[in-house]
Image (cartoon, rainbow, N blue to C red; front, side, top):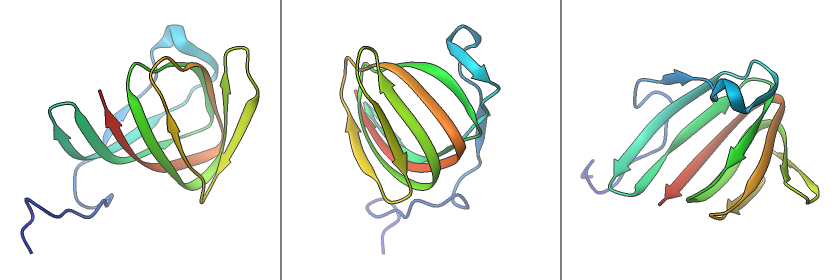
Length: 115
């Protein structure tokens, strides 16, 4: 099979990138992100992302599809209801979303982002 036209998402397929949310967005804790980017082409990104517990403000200017693989998080839109997401949940966050992401149990997701 051609690796240019078919790719599995795997934490073993690429080197991880470790980061944190910007300090001015952190609400609680010290969340650490680990990202395994499988694809970066133009305005499309996909891969696997993990975060340790903590809470930070999120601002989406892009579309993101997520599927939670492990863990437990709470996503709350400004002025809206809190949404609990856990293993097996899939969802889309649209441009314009503003709120918080709180990781209660280390969360692992796969994602596709399009700008």
